[in-house]
Length: 366
Image (cartoon, rainbow, N blue to C red; front, side):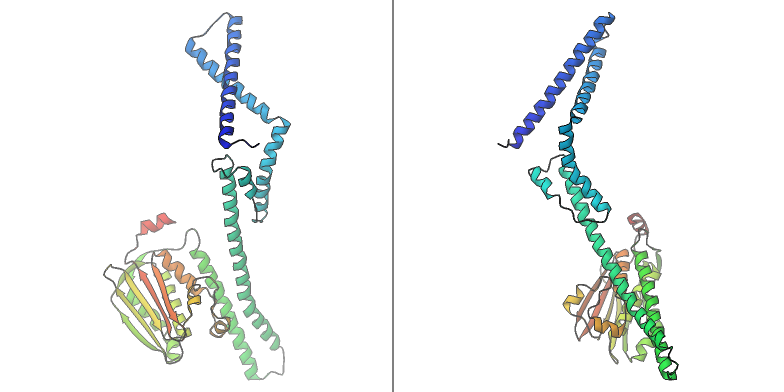
């Protein structure tokens, strides 16, 4: 018959009290014998101290001897062995461990000496397992993104060995190789930027500057791209000052504007608006009449390497890292980004930023 848990606790408490009583009794009789043989008895206070210390020493020796009993050690090792094996498995990269039988053995007790250890190991294995899945997915995505342009480069480089190619064919192949090389270079740059932004101490240097001047400069720098497609640019920028990392914010507006230009058809419209709200937050809205996205795509657009339509993205290019970089930079600035889109009706991206970001708070965060 299995004893109730409270009965086990009472027996355990009584066992400890009994062991302490026996230990102090032994200490009392042992010190008494020593005093009698030496014809000297110390002060009563000193006797109590000596008896207490000696009693605890005898109690500790008794506990040590009990733990050395073979069947006690075997029981402890039987209980600890799965925990040790679980940690060894995690060290070898296997995070699929099951310690549920411990919960059964402990009767669901949350105050059991091993319950916290079991919970911590299980939680650690689960989190490490998720990190490993993310790492494998990241490697797979990077390999896929690199393999595609490399295959094109190798294929057309091999085709160029044909001496019978015409001048136009050779130029066409070389143009493709150049385009795919640029794609590889951009992928490498974006990976380095994302790694830098996700590091423990990302680059972050605050300066005060005119936000409207920055956005206008980037729009003009991309004029060849939007004039080539005869896109109508509608610009409405209030005079706004901001304290932020100028270089990182450059990357935000470049990525967002490039996306709008890329997915807006010829003779479409892109509107860029910047203004200050009553709560002193700065709002920048970039809206286009492009191809748009469905609701499922909107849920994943800030995930690394996500592409709503693989065939569409092969046509327009891109690595799926632009928006994750934008989101990370906005997060570093304690701002927010919101995207609204509908297939065939375009996309609207709204970025909200604080006018001033406290440099000390950012330093303390990292």
